[in-house]
Image (cartoon, rainbow, N blue to C red; front, side, top):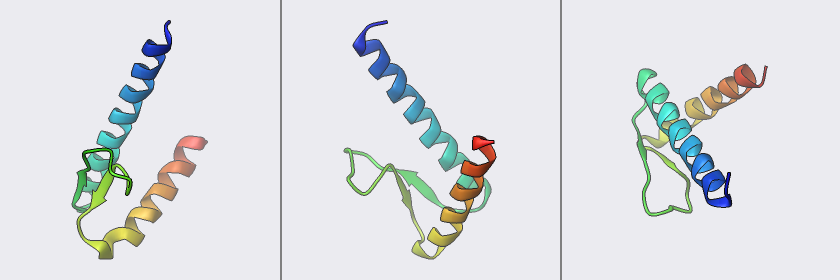
Length: 68
């Protein structure tokens, strides 16, 4: 596997995880959008700022669930 292949694989995983997170947020009724242009603020925009604490809690629960 070349260096480029490894970079592509990492980017594909990153893309898929971001898509999964946004889909899961939508299931929870949270409006979220993917950012573009390599935003330095992150990859996901939470539309309603009041939902940010709920998003943080969901991320923590997913992290502990998938870490085992």
